[in-house]
Length: 81
Image (cartoon, rainbow, N blue to C red):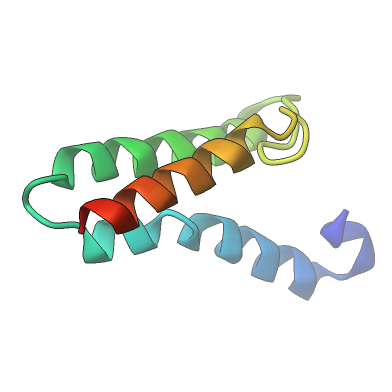
């Protein structure tokens, strides 16, 4: 949808999607480093899958569950650190 509005907005949207899991990688401790890498890879693979085929948009096409999962993990991560 952003590409229909502007190419610049499309690029900004793609960059923003790739920056979502970076918080977990930057601020994770040694104790939970593995789970943080796993969650970041999961979200990046979900985003990349839309570029290789006609798959639903990751955060809206799959429903609300990825968004809820992201926030549940965020709450757990903040509580653990």
